[in-house]
Length: 358
Image (cartoon, rainbow, N blue to C red; front, side, top):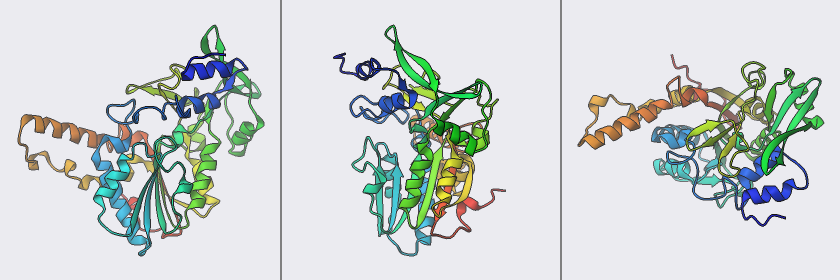
């Protein structure tokens, strides 16, 4: 029995009894209460962290989302309105939205299993109307790595060999065969796929939670057939993030790097549909932000209108403008991320994000 007080020590103790599924390995690597990536130290998201999220890249994101929240409040007809950020990290987005909204009868909540006083959605009061937001939450749900071998689907496990973590394969449980067959998906020989059954289950809990409200889900991913395309994503989508770099060594430095995979947005739509939630928008982040008025922010004003007092101030403004544009340009984050907007118990028509851009 290892006495090593680290995540590697914990893994070593577990692996002496046999290999772990990658899903269980990921659960420990990200969410171990003491050594997990999201449990220790400051939030890893942001310009000084391992990766940058859309909300942390530029203040224009919170500006645009605050505008949509105001629209939601008007449609709520005087009910108490709650803004809820699930997977809120250090709560920066919640504070930014709250600072821009002066109306009364509002509540703001950050929900995070590792970093917030509210650990689950069930800790949020259920009365009133709810604006539920999440950013890159579902892609951090522990997932299984699967590979098609002939007629059999295999699941990847993590084992220890000669003191190093390594992969092993085992026949996958039938539930994963059912996942693909029920969606009409056939994996090619040797094709890898990354699946979390909890994508749909978690979203079903969200859809059941609200009586009236909007669910805005921002994440990396596609729908069924595109996500599991045998040529475009033959090796799956699993990736690791560390020091602003992405790589494929998922077993390196457990607890020291983020682990993620693209999600199946169709699972979220199915979960919502079973619970009275209708999908009103699914498209790239750039289109969403442009439709809800992101370019009304001062960072998008013509540069000659800016009042600049010094060279340093001018350079800082140029950098801020570049970061803002990254959210809407077609070759950056604005194209890579997808936004799913679903509505329950409210009007389905004439929302700002439904407006044609041209």
